[in-house]
Length: 69
Image (cartoon, rainbow, N blue to C red):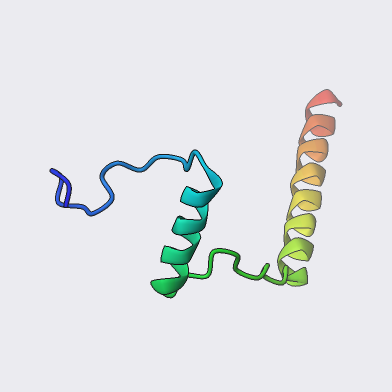
C-alpha cells in the first residue's frame, strides 16, 4: 500500500508491450473488461437536445428582432 492508503499510488503509463499485457491480464483477473462494448446511443436524447437547441435559437432570434424593431 502507498503512503496515502491506496494500492495504486504510483500510476504510470506502461513503457513496453509486456507491461501493458500484464495490466490487461490483471484487469481480466479482477473481473474488469478492458474493452467494454459501446453503448447504444439513445435517439430520444439526441432528438430532445435538438429540439431544445431549436427552441433556444428561436427565442434568441425573437428577442433580437423585438429589440431591433
